[in-house]
Image 1: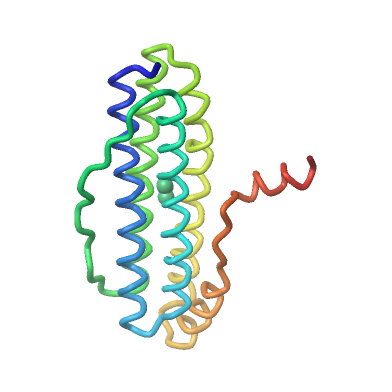
Image 2: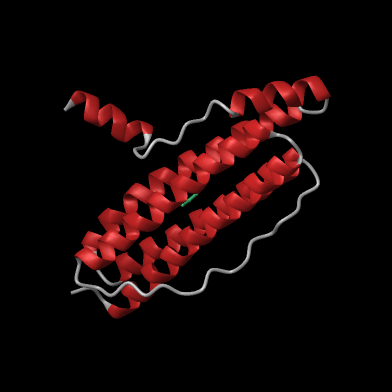
Length: 177
Ligand code: FEO
């Protein structure tokens, strides 16, 4: 049976992952409105990734005999001033999520809940990737995005992102199995 405080903290994180998904869908909608369809595609893939995160946590809580309780998801921001502004907000958001995951790990350790600690390690690794992927786009936008041609080129590249249910590390592990 899962500790009640941990169950509550994981439920809060399920809500936070759904919020992340909602936020990135709002960013996608902004990009559609300014005709940056590649950026919109990138954000829609990110939206789906966040749903996977939420469902991974849902499965863990339910699988350990805990109770998943869904709460209202707050409304996300709707407007931004530029593509760079969107991705900088996204990075800030991911940094907040990294902090939340760190607090969850600390809680699991303080309760000597090794199963939750091990489960959360996937999210610790994932957050490194999440921050890096936002950071990479920010660097590209800073270098080339200031010119209309540069922004168009980056938009086309970002449109190539396809949602993958498994992380690159998980895909490598699956290939080797
Ligand atoms: Fe679920 Fe982007 O972290």
